[in-house]
Image (cartoon, rainbow, N blue to C red; front, side, top):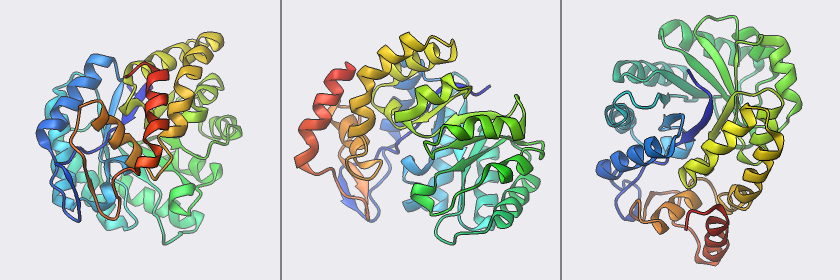
Length: 295
């Protein structure tokens, strides 16, 4: 069910930079339509790119429900339901299932730095509590917690843990995780800059920040890479590479939201402690957007 270009969707908000800038539900619906038209293969609602850390639990659940409603079966929806509290992760995962999401994406618990055994027990508890397909998410650069391939291998034996989003940019992990988990375990990149190589090495796709801004380009890149067309994928990736870099000039999703605002797709809204994108970087992002063909 899950492969190719899967967008880590931003959560659009009304203009402003406040602790409780309102979610813009109408813009959210337009973004879903934008992705369906562009061929995006799946949508991740309220992952970390969707500002999950600053949405209340009620808002979090509502955005997932709204994305499922707007998608209307046209594209699979994956609910971002990770937390550094196992109880909270269970609640959010249950909410995503009730909303009609096809699967959930659960980031490793951040800040409290669990052991590998703690990670295993955390994910096992969530999987046993909620009968929905679940995708692990390892992004140590954001969480200070690195889930080792051996732990992933143990978790892969739990029936409804179906894959992992691996965002270490360590391509050696593709082969190691496949060796430990088998061919049917979903391997998804969480790093746009190395996603092409990840797929050519045997991965199934990418959960992408770049796809927010260049959804058709990312879809086509994934299609070529999954067909083992290294040359074609390389040509497409060369056009997207400046955007992969530019969208991390400040903390994600700050640049992505600015780019979407520049494209006229969302208002200039974000929640503290994130701030609006610094003007000194605007020209670099605009140049990258032009190179990618989205301006």
